[in-house]
Length: 484
Image 1 (cartoon, helix red, strand yellow):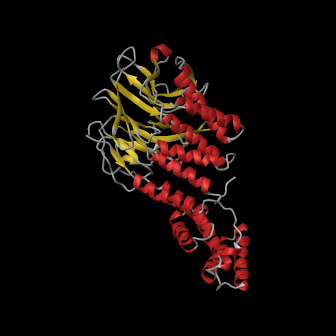
Image 2 (cartoon, one colour):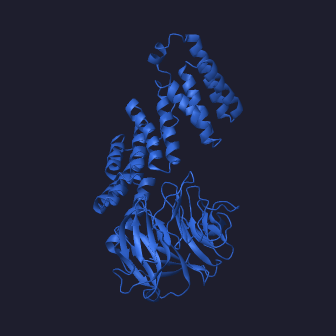
Image 3 (spheres, one colour):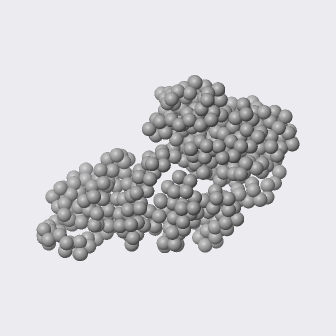
């Protein structure tokens, strides 16, 4: 059950603390609020907003004025999609009506808005302040559990794994059967895996499945268990299942880049028409701007793909937008959990990391990048022939030489990808020509040459799906191949 939007009745003790407010004033304030409710339910938004604004201006001492402010803010968020217009309303509610329960909801909404816009640790701390105020000032508020979850997510984003795990555990303890508790348990399991406790992670995910079957969280836990068990415990030899989707031959136009969206669905960039597509219900749907010489395909939460172009830099819209600062010859890129875009150029001394404010940070230059659930990245450098696991600040935490734990070395990374569980896959070329899959610790989990798989083509793109399979883009045969 979601408590956002819960209707709170005026509290008699609060009214008693307001001697200037007469019974007649209270009655009129309630009538105004209910009149706005009626108009809003009938989608007469102009009438409803005018009524609620009148209430706030003429009866500012009434708790119904706090309700009206919250309703006005929610309209800006949910209908107008204008968070900037909602923020001053929520700030006024938090400041002028602090003693009402609605201030707690304002704090949660403000925290979420600021968290969604955060691109740095300093910004996420500002969002956490609102969540912490809700917990501290309204310990019995029904939204405290949601605030605990948000605090844990922010701590996880900052790499504070132990504190994040504690926050998720506290959220699970409050109303253990709620959807929020189940979401917190999923996050707690993922945090355990990041901390190196695979057994604890799998145990927590299985407990979630057992206690809450037939829920979205149990379904989410199921694929996370399956992929981890297959990739890290069973590790069966890779084999080709042939063209995918089954029976689809010569149906693409030179696919060279693959990416997965937030829900695990596949996106394809075709070089013949220089455009990204979303594979939806078996059909290709245009899903982003046209851009020449695509080097990386990025899919933000909106589902509209961005392209790192060798000609224009980062392209988000039909009119090319060059990344700032300009990257002379971009070879790849990725989106990190903060929403920052990392763009690399193997001939330059650094990666350009473009944040929400356009600021850039510098880390060692590489050829290709893939995001990690820790907030960092795995980076491929053909010059040094190493894969590097970077933290969120771009510092190297682990280096793995090309060819380590393989029967032969390779010289080049053709394509690089990752999944939300920390697995990394690459198409490689050299003495070992084929597919390699690494675990979060940099160990080779599975590998195969194209020859051993019985496939031939010009493979240029790779993606990891939610069942543990690998999708390969074959440019020369205009199709996809699935490995399992």
